[in-house]
Length: 510
View 1 (cartoon, one colour):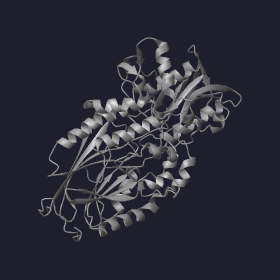
View 2: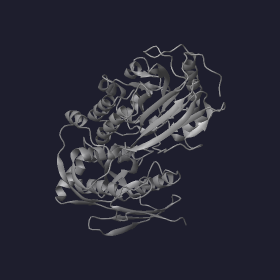
View 3: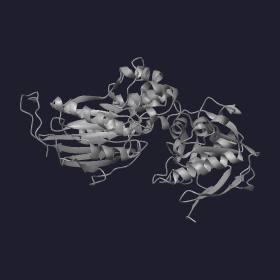
View 4: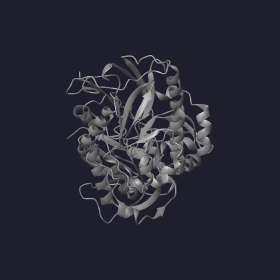
């Protein structure tokens, strides 16, 4: 236990002295990635949270830890902002996907925000629009109890953003270790103001959050994000740690794409030390879509058009980054067939939704492919394609999460080992004929036409790393893969089946 912190004599509105114990309940979300149908369901969940117990007995707060918005489309940014306002979130931290769009464009779109936007390790230049709205921290008061809220943007933000030019004026601290003393200084400043309950909204990733828990003094809760980790319950040395002075520190994270949300219930003693904690994860999809939100979102997005029917959809793979994903197969097939190319490819992380049995409309497709990237057709050599896939397999299979993810394909078959060695590859023509590719000596003089989005083609970390081919593109389109998918489903003119066919195989190590 640390020594008691001297605080002002805070009283309730009815002049009854504040209780020695403070009960706090936090509704938290992270990494929604623009999933606006789930936003409608999360509003229903948040409304239930508001009703569950009298706010006189419990300090109830709602926080978001970043990547709520996604992509370059202004409409999706407006919807994300509307969601945060309608659901009553008090603060959000700037994630990497909030920076998909240049700062000078996004700031006017969220000018009506009712929530705080946080980022301690961001130092925007004074003439940058973000300078006016970003804050290191703030003090949240509920029922006379005060909480210090700090926000952290991802130090590797630049690795996850396609448009790079607008990032330089933000002056992001890329060395996480250098941010730790600054975070501690901010905590100390809050403590000097009599704040003894500290919450960090962190879009730094699980490993970095654990480092914070093991390093910082006087932090109580870290609401995490970025690595899409699902932390259920409370487990020592996983999401419960203890400071050098023996005070508990709790870490949360609720997965990705809004599939889940969290409710963290804690009890603080008079010194601001957690004495009780419970962490529950909720399933978003069991909640109904909020009809008011649905109507408001459609005012921004427009009315959806039904384009076809999904007869069957194979279960979305748990390891969506390290194996064939049938939902990606269908997207790649759409690219290849609609644009009449030899190959269709996409990066595993680019899909953010999934196909489901029943009617499918344009809004569903936009959620499956929500980044608002631009579809392109390029010409690439056999050597470039083999090396790109080989590199992505090797990088992805080195990590437990298999991120950044393998390349999903149409027009190719390939096999690799669990330790990341590419062992074989074949080209499949439009008639289904297979032609072996020598992966050890791929040809420099043989070329394939390839349909993908511009980020997949050019990105060194999450794509093929063929920026020079993007500059020589055969075709460039002003839309993302959702438009191609709508056309493809209409042209099929029959119920669609989404299922894997063995085009990517993972084998045991040699």
